[in-house]
Image 1: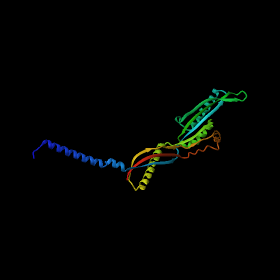
Image 2: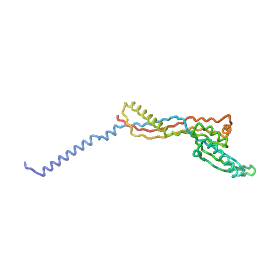
Image 3: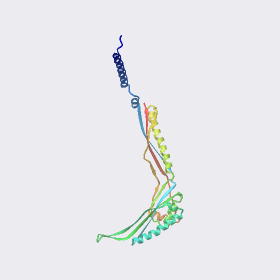
Image 4: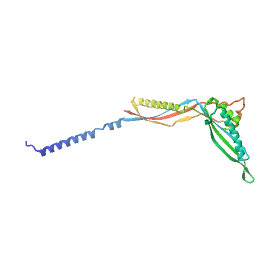
Length: 252
């Protein structure tokens, strides 16, 4: 048979086309590895939560002095005199100046209403000065509270208890929340036929830190200054909670 270059080229091109079509049919009929993975991969979404109780080791006392007088100046002068005495007493009890902070100061008129003339008139002025006092030795809270009242404090916003180890305790609660989520996922995995699960995503949820709070009315404060009945302060317990969301994958 005589060699024909043109025929040889045609035959080669035909073979290449046939091979290309064959591979295309194979790829079309057989799903890719990614497609198989997408079909078989399943998910479990769970939430985990935990809370722990701790004893506070620090307190913040809200104390104030309220004075009234016929003039604004007199109300302020009377207030300053009493508050200076309160601050001096608190420092004498061992409170550092950096732990004493002014939280409010205001002076406003007091009015009287005339039912006959339907008019109101200024009858005096009231001055208010409030302090936030951090007590780092929690056993001294009651003593400092009483000392401030004896020095002239006549109102209070209450006492808030907290912990200097708040962040450390929150991390502990967060770890326990992760364990809680894991326990739930494992229980689901067993129910699904003991499938193997793997963590895909973890996100931190809301957290809650509830310091113990105790309030006192003006009458309770005045009653507490009796020498034979010192104020007893109960610090109670704080609650710190943590929540997480976890996404697991499994193949079935």
